[in-house]
Image 1 (tube, helix red, strand yellow):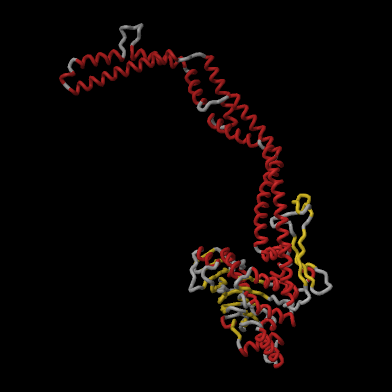
Image 2 (cartoon, one colour; image 1 turned 90 degrees about the vertical axis):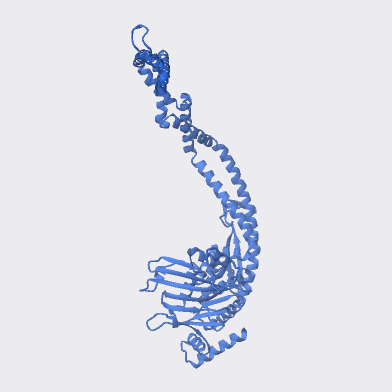
Length: 580
């Protein structure tokens, strides 16, 4: 099967590394060197390529930025390739080029396949490409949440399916509970709001305003307030247009216009232009008669009743009282009333809504309890298999009598959910507290690994867990930073042997101080500083033949030329080759 392989990394201005190229290959690669030589920068660099947090402190003093570039061979159609191509990245003959730049000010940029991408995308790809483990990961394994996650990861679909259903129900329950709490805790405020709305609606209903009524009343009040002046002006205008019956000798506009029309009618036949003017004068006469008629009707209809004026002003006062409280005009008052009626309906429905939410909450709690029970059962079944597999691996890591087990427990909580007749606390991942226990030798009681495992034992437990994962949920590349911490002697040999076996299925890169581990590597890289304390391009080199024997001798005895150390180094290499 073709898998992804990390082929090369170029590191510039990162920590003690000035400019170096780390050439990797399939199988097992060991990275060695003196303490402080910069071996851990290999892990740090890969972490940056995989979307890890950027830190300005990583940039070499005097440099503007640190740059890490990686070349990963990826099989066509793999999830990593699909996601990269979706982001616009281009493959270069089956390889994916990744780079990360960190400035001295702490700013970070990422590129994938020649395209600038968010750093988060690199982290997404990391899940499918590389598993990185360092000292912090060993400490992370001490956390109960990480132990539960490890068990869930091992269980696969058996846990993932009920956990997905549980998470969905849990999210809905949280939403329902929050709404219910909001309604009940704000009951007094909501009741006060309802009273205010009810009072306002009753006040508006008592007045019964109509849309546009305020404008109509304002016009009517203006007219009634000047009724006498309006009537007098209308009468004078009517007399000027149509004449005054009490003064038959008076001259009015209508009579004058009619006389002008009669004078022209006698001669209109002689000139079309004059005929047109005659017609227009006729139209003026008609218009004058119409206006005069309307003025007469206006004067007759004009109501000068002071009682009506008083009624209008009283109505306007009632409308003004509403507009002072609920809007600029009657239209806004009516809009407020419409909104408030809807809100009041919502508030008055609280009791009904509380009942609905309470019923839904209780149903969701019952459903959550059933799903939590199913989830716990799936975890318990997976825990037996997982513990047995890790225990078997520990036997291959010089811990033949160690036994690993899981304790899955729940905590009583009166506000929890019911599981197997008990009311227990629950959270987003279920009701279970999962704890990994270790009995390092016969007769020893199982104890939490946080309390019962030494540094060396913890390293081996972590490696055993990762090896088990490799058989169920593999990734193409594993990178271990001092997974052999606190280990020596036979245990170190067994760790080297187990890493070599893991490398038959995946690419394995190990930063190590132990010659027993390095001897099992298919390839050994030496990281060494120059005289000025930096690591340059020539400071990372592949060790072969005599050079590798010398480095193993140094790791064994601190003396590259010790005959005893050389003999031991050659013996280690021979044993490792024989085991392969």
